[in-house]
Length: 184
Image (cartoon, rainbow, N blue to C red; front, side, top):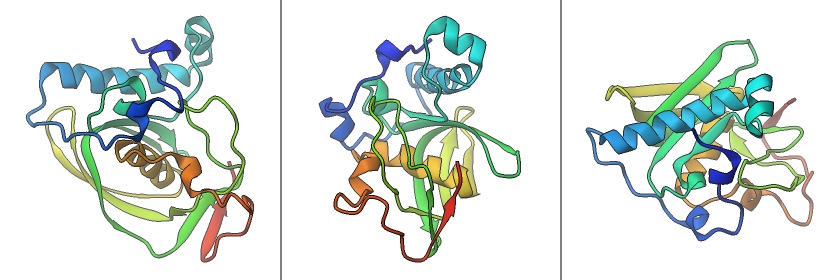
């Protein structure tokens, strides 16, 4: 199982690389890595397991965060209506997005960033993503709200982008045009 020690921290060069496509069908090693990413996110949300294993709670994790520069992400998050979005994806790609933006009113965090970096992170309100599942099935996901924000955050990791790159350094809490906040 992935532990907090496996998660590389801000400043590590792998976090700024553009991750490589995963050759499909995925190798057993790549499948295991992707399963481990999802297992970490799920376990980190269970207070007992998180405390026992010293895990920081997370709702998404990308392979580059464990120093594997490949296009794999895992997400385990509940949307505003209480519906669970749990995905382990190879080669996720945003194929379309809304014009409208959104952002988390309390800002974003990251398992690779230990300190709190305040500020609004503009994201698309809705995204359509194509990817391949652990089972090798091609999927098209239409996401909005928090799941859309999380998948954009994780796909950014695959492109060497950190959430704070989007924060206006001079005015971190400046209202974002054409954007609706999500309270988190």
